[in-house]
Length: 148
Image (cartoon, rainbow, N blue to C red; front, side, top):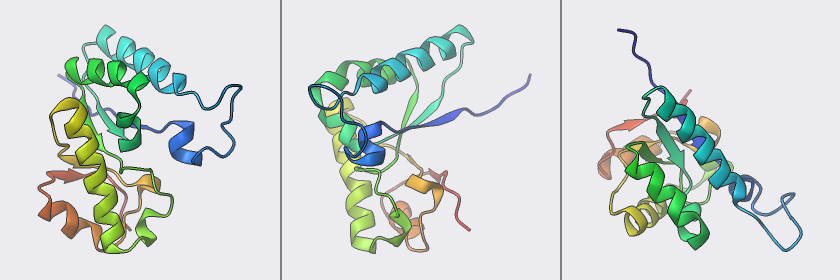
């Protein structure tokens, strides 16, 4: 039997651009989060696939996103840490700021789903030299960042 791993970074326009360039009439929309997750999960379900979804903690704080995030987790997909704010240049942050970004997503995920992620992927796929020790200390099982 062939086996593989499917993972995806769930980055909304808000998490990538911090509001810059994603202004819509009436404010910011996170419909892309709901629609993207629904479409992905429909596809995964068709083939009996469970995926790892690296999610941004700020998306766990908007009530309009609670339902789809809970549904994805209930469907058996792994929710993994992609930091609190999708900090661009994560590798350049101080160790304290890196830990704050990692812990912030953990707290948001735990508050909504009652679980803490065990996997991590850095925004930009580069975490810097000090992040591995932070992840290990916080009980992470794996990191899926590229670390040159």
